Length: 300
View (tube, one colour):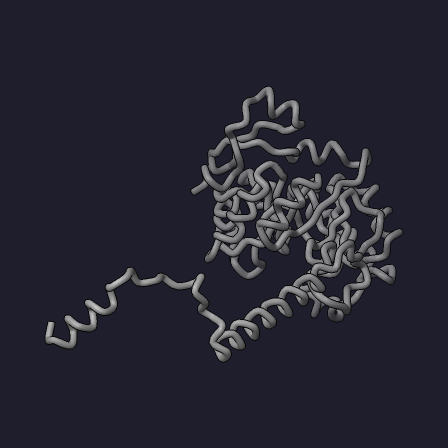
């Protein structure tokens, strides 16, 4: 499975180099080519802001790769890895961190096993909402890990619900300390969600981790937004931190209207005897029907 899911390793080295791609071997043992390695990404800290997104379909992933998105996060279900594998195959040359479910690992050993499973089907890293202890175990096992700080939706009961975090000194210091714990645990990056922009700017200066900003302004090393928000897959209301560059939901509505219209016309044609017409049927050769009726009626 891994050899099909980890990217196209058939590009000749010279061609890969011309395209700015690095030849890699995954933890699962498959060859491939990527736009970045973990080292490359870390070397970009303080140099330029990287662009990150989450595609939800192979079509979105392929479009993001063609457009030049730097990195992607991909939702990974260990019980149904096929969707993540399909996205990996659709964008074989883009660095991807597979986002693993929080409750899928209840021990350090399970965290390592889950990380290895993601890496074996094409992940270049994993993104998690784990504790530093789990991150440390996975990182020590050689798995590149991106943590999650600030508003962590699945843990939001501890910070007062789905709202901004870090608007007072105690919360700001707590976020900073969490990120430093992830750094000490061996993570390479951290997603920082819905905190004040200026706070992230200061934190980014004080950690070696790549900070991926979603709803935290321009202070991060990576700017992250979901593909469904970028493309406007859904109608309003939208998250405050998002921007819609297209309104694909309108096209979907138009397509649905066309589907309904097509079915209505089909029904009407049936009622009026318009369909099927002579161009849609097979004409019997001369004498076939007469001969058939005669034979049947005579007892065969």
